[in-house]
Each structure stands twice: as C-alpha cells, then as structure tokens.
Image (cartoon, rainbow, N blue to C red; front, side, top):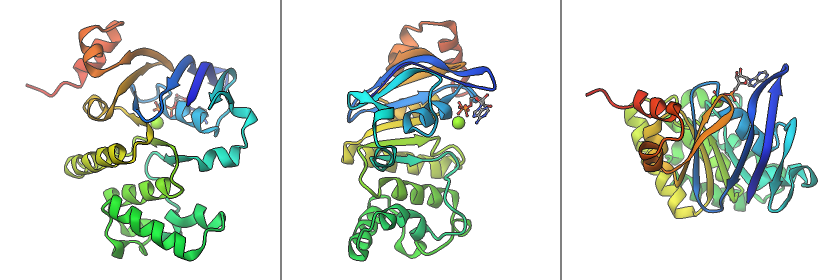
Length: 242
Ligand code: ADP
Ligand code: MG
C-alpha cells in the first residue's frame, strides 16, 4: 500500500530519518516506536506527504507519491496529530466536519456520518458543540479520531494519540481504539513511545533508533531475538518495576 525505499530526511544538514526502507501492509496495524526525538513524527509526515524526503522514494499503490494528486491523497488518509491538533477557535463539530464541508457534502450526509462516528468513538453527542478547551484530554482525542475517520480513509496514521492522557483514560481509550481498528479493518500506522501500548496494538512493531530501524517484528521476536543490544535495553527500560 505504502512502500518507503531508502528514505532520508535531514533538517539543517542533520539527518533525522533514514535511510529507511519499510512496507506498510494493508489492513494491518504497524506501530512505530522509539525514544523521543528518534524521528517518529518526521517519518509519519513523510508518509503523509507533508514533508518531502531528501533521498529515496515513497510509493503509494505502486506509483511514486509525487505523481499523486496530494490533495486527493490526503483525503484518503486519516491523520491524528500529536497532542490532538484540533483548531481551538472551532467547536468539536466544526473540527470534525471541516473537510467534508469543504468537499461539498450535503448537510444531511454530514449529520448522518457524524452520528455514526460519535457512536463508534463513544463520544457523547451533547459534547459536540463545545470548543476543544471545554473538553477533557480523552474527549479531545475522540474528536480528533472522529475528524480523522470522517471521510472513511483507507489508512489511518496516529501520532502518539494517547500520549498525554492519564492512565485510566488511556486504558479505556486504548481498548476503544483497538475495537475500532478491528471492526473497521483499516490499515493503521500508530506512533507511540510505550512498548506496552505497542504490544497491545501491533501486528508489526518497528523499533526506531536515531532515525533508522533497529528491528522490525512482533513483540515476542523483539524480546526473544533482539538484533541489537539497544532493542533489549529499550524493552527492559520499560519493564514494570517489580
Ligand atoms: P519523535 O517524533 O520521534 O520524537 P521527531 O520526528 O519529532 O521525533 O524529530 C526528530 C528530530 O528532528 C528531532 O531532533 C527534532 O528536533 C528534529 N526536527 C523535527 N522537525 C524539525 C523541523 N521542522 N526542523 C528542524 N528540526 C526538526
Ligand atoms: Mg513525535
């Protein structure tokens, strides 16, 4: 579906991603994990076409990303930004329905889609006319998810969607998200820095170190056959204290 081949990205002459080669399989959940600053968000933005690689290439559906109509490509993706990324001056409803409105959807179609997604994401309908500042962190993330799912994208990219939530809310939203991924059969790329979360969601875990792939595999493969001492260190550092 999306294939990265020897992709590189530098900022100010400093390489923060790559070279990375990676294939995202359809209808599976891939989790990108690694320490803060290792290039996870940058990698996601490269996949989204928000950043252009300095080297290597990205193919979508078998043809180079630069040959695609970027506007249409983005509409085929759902993106949940790190820290929610809702527009503060717009209500939850306006945030969620913005793109559908711009695409000229009729009011009835927008309302029906919104109802369905509120039910799916377990967001109380009476919250939908509030501004982001009037919602809890978990509610804001649910609105972000409604917005990302609105156009029924094939691919969902989520950048630390649960990073800023307290443990109980996080646990609840993890379960709800997993249910949603499983029921919709979407292709999902989820970024986290938490190995427990990676294990919970992933068909495949991609562990990054300094912008490169340290190891790809299931949680069990990373634990049982680490390909680099960093892999074991990263997993051990996240072990719950005895
Ligand atoms: P992560 O999401 O894994 O925490 P990022 O992809 O956000 O990491 O960042 C990787 C590195 O690239 C960091 O050192 C960050 O400071 C740097 N970086 C990210 N975006 C930019 C940018 N637009 N300009 C300059 N440096 C950037
Ligand atoms: Mg990040």
